[in-house]
Image (cartoon, rainbow, N blue to C red):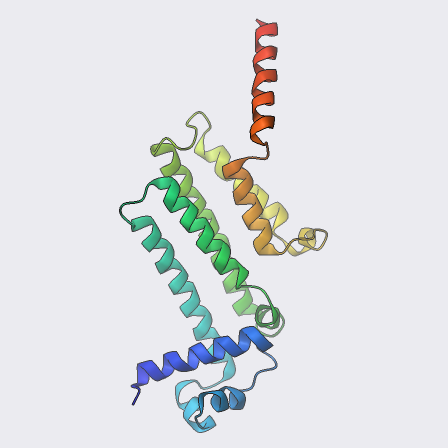
Length: 211
């Protein structure tokens, strides 16, 4: 027989599965209980309401996300570039889960919870960007002739200028896709290898002419 902690985790797991598939608004507590093979009365012993359930579910996802990112950075036997790639892959996968009917319903029906999610993602992205830039310079992966402050300013300006409802409504990108694109441009640039070679060549030619 499952203890209270395991039962609660089982409820959260089932609720998340149903919310992601059908949305928050369309799923009832009775349907969650039925899917778990328990009575609605038993379900209410663990969660007083559907909103209470989705709030705890959201809090757990935020805590798990932070834990996984910290594990990646603490992993031994992998260099900085490998950790960076793993972290960006993880954030990309997590971001892809933050779309769909569940989050649309949260935005409409529980706006304060939606603001918590958005604020967490904003703070996480900014804090991780700062950590990445500092570590990148220390590990000689990123250039050290460009100040950290200007790079962070570029990142924050891009996020604030692009990742907002008004701007995104004019672009064929979701919020998560926009953030991923900003990271990609900052880390990889917009020039191809051929373009970078030509740009460097032209820049050197201009330098020689001026001298």
